[in-house]
Image (tube, rainbow, N blue to C red; front, side, top):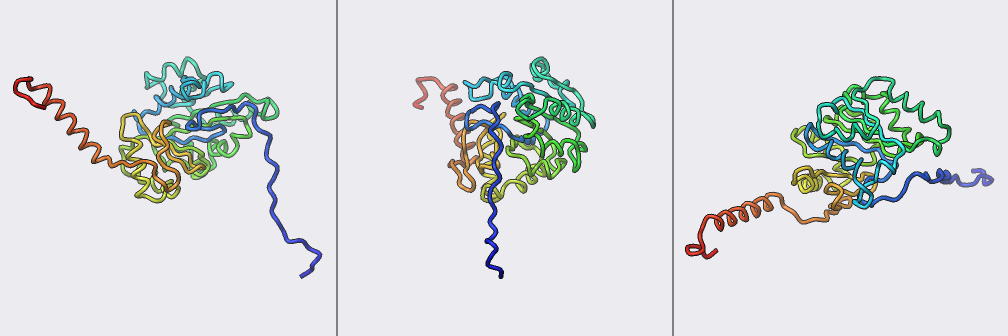
Length: 275
């Protein structure tokens, strides 16, 4: 071996300058820039979540999104079918359909401003877009690998069917929200995709069951951090370490016993009851 050669050593590339539009938010909230993937059926709480993310204030732990972002855009095939989306339609740039070319138009619009920091700081939500538009080589998949450079601080994709989502999108998702699943095949797919981050399938099911026990609660995964939360409220797992002690069956039994005692007290009089 020629001793004139140095041992090859990989050195890090200089990081990009911090994005001046990204301000601190609550640590439980989705941190920009992020690619959020939400999986949930109709009436699972997706629109409720969007309303909270768009309209709740920083003091309440959210973004103050209408001032945090320069633009909030929503593309949804079903937004006109949901009365709870009426506020979103008034406050955001909403398109009630999706077709090829719309994403590329958005990309060209962002590029027209010049450098990243001169582009509008944007939140883009794609809700119930037809599955064929999220297959390999789609415009959406292309955007998922470029959104940071286009000053899209939050790219949210909501779908009913995980398997219709291109691998590129799933692999690039920094944050995942799993609503209560009514389809066992969907739940199995979700478990296969992310259980490895949290110590395997048995651990993952404990996390999921705890996170989704209450109506409108969901399992939120900070994938790159290896953290799982019940909604945005409680950190419940750090990689394979569970941070709660909970058995949903025992919890339901305790709840039923409390309800029975309450009914017994209401139905009996003071003279005949020593509850």
